[in-house]
Amino acid sequence: MNRIRHLVSVDDLSIQEILELFERAREFGEDLKGFASTCPGMISASLFYEPSTRTRLSFESAMQRLGGGVLTAAEMKTSSAAKGESLPDTVRVVSGAYADLIVLRHPSEGAAKLASEFSTVPVINAGDGSHEHPTQTLCDLYTLWLEKKHLEGLEVVLAGDLRYSRTIHSFAYALARFGANIVSVASRGLELPDYVLRRLREEYGVEPVPADTHQLKGIAEGSDAVYLTPNKPHQLSLFTDSQGLKVERVDAVYMTRPQTERHREGDSIDSYMRLGHETMDTEPMRDAILMHPLPRRDEISDELDDDPRSLYFKQAARGVPIRMAILALLLGKLKLKAKPPEAEARLVRVEMGKNPCPNTNCITHTEERHTRLGFRIMSRDPLRAACGYCSQEIPIGVVGCSTTRHFHRRDSAVARKIRADHLILFRDEAEALARGYSEASRG
Ligand code: NCD
Image 1 (cartoon, rainbow, N blue to C red):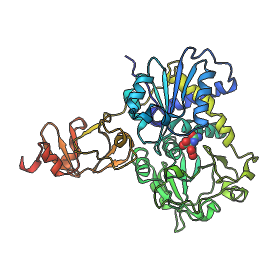
Image 2 (cartoon, rainbow, N blue to C red):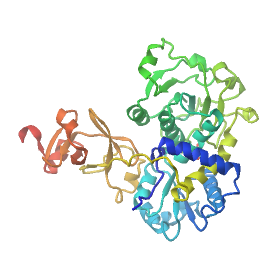
Image 3 (cartoon, rainbow, N blue to C red):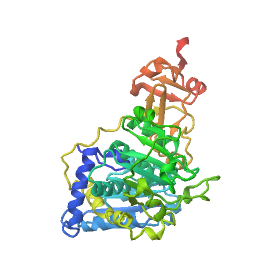
Image 4 (cartoon, protein in one colour):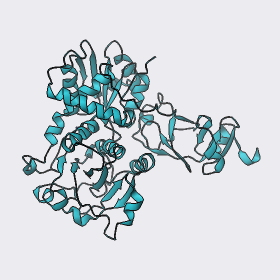
């Protein structure tokens, strides 16, 4: 039986599949009105619990251009959710008779993953809190690929609010997978979060090296720029002097707006950066294309709108053909030669009295009744795990083996060897004891 395919994270597509989707998107883009017989009779439902213009409209346009229909719930906050309906119940109702595919935007991290567990049709993540936004990333990568003809080895500046921008997080993972280098230039206090840096390091071998901010005048003032590279990072760090690694060429600058709706106490945008000609005309940036997922506030000055390097409006237009390709794929109307990624490893169970995910904005907290506390192993030495919904690291005190019913220190040699399907994580010893596990040395 065919497993339903969802697009919750950009990692749900293999590199070869993404490249093939680009080829198909190019065909769709060259003849937007020519593919109306691709998905006739099929319906997508847009469930949007947060504001959106581009993402929702480009999805709906894409579905209609493929010959399908759309159902729009753009104001989910005023729908049954306002009456207290859970996300899983809404998804169970909409998937099936109502729609053949769900496009979901939600303010909680991990919401799309939860929806995919209850849906009988494909779920596409159109943004979950500050976690991920995979289709925006495909659109961004597609633009880079069209403009630069390749992705490997590109030098991409990620700028602005790197802490809360989901577009930045998904884009950073994808750039690392494609072997591109990232220069992270965050507005002060809005640097890439630790869990993103850890994932970049552990899953893609990316090492951060301080970058020389003198070279990135205008954009990196007041920022600790960091160069993140999946390409031989250890050798690179030998070449940095006290000023940091010199960034001699920039292929693209990707700017983001301050995500003030997600900011917490203490976050400030007082010194938020603003790009104008002055910055874009300094040496390493001179040949860079300028991208932005939009909407923008004033972090890109209007004076750059007519500059041929400014691609943000083209980038938004390309959201339609790329989403046509994604919809056709998930609806089974587009067959790719490339293989999908290996199925995600099964989530590890936890036996913890209360939800251990430290992220208060995680869907496991808002929909506690419906989430199965499952975790992905991030590293074995020492054992570390991330929430299966929002990807943030969870604190582990000791680990148990479900066959021996013993528990061990999480950095012990035994803990490293326990098979994943026998592994149980505990917050602390008391939790392990309460669940009938005994300390290994005492038998
Ligand atoms: C982005 C989003 O919603 O994360 N917008 C979009 O989808 N194009 C970026 C943003 O809101 O800043």
